[in-house]
Image (tube, rainbow, N blue to C red):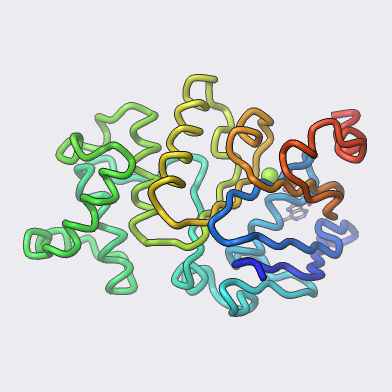
Length: 249
Ligand code: ADP
Ligand code: MG
């Protein structure tokens, strides 16, 4: 049994079958990539996993519990976090304060900006935030304003804000889309560092094969809403079904 078990999921948008009988099993503490041509249903599947879309049928089990019918924030509290394509950070706050906000949110069940004022008394939260910043190599920049960070460091900060919620499953939708090669490689390194330091499962949707082959242990190929193959990176290269799916791209 994987930490994430998707069985027989279907989703239609009017006459279009965006997901057709999707089965997916993601093993705990692995990096699992979902690849496929444009329009294959990758983002739709991700939206089902985070509770933004309700499938027409099928089941989604995470850590032994059903995800379906739960609201996005409830699914987040179960341990599923999604990393957004554009960093969503608070520009006028320090790096440290940015990381502390999700800590308070997690404890209090809501974002409470006024909690920042009492931050100094929160030894446990400070220690937790520092540990995460160390993991993403940002501890030396803890007092910098988030707005002053480079693009790469903003991404590290955003990742820290996600990790501080201690997700068991991290979902990444094309984390390197629109990036130059150097930024892409930095993101690959960052994800590798995180994977080495924490017990975490990653499910990554990615178009860039360089990223997929650098990170993934298992790869599921989605085409026209249905999984075609699930394999290791070595076995996916040159797989006839994969080449077929990408023809005409
Ligand atoms: P991918 O992320 O693999 O590129 P998507 O999951 O975004 O694919 O889309 C799968 C198919 O579903 C596409 O044909 C897309 O146009 C369609 N689709 C996605 N979201 C909606 C929606 N909200 N309403 C109607 N059609 C949608
Ligand atoms: Mg997409």
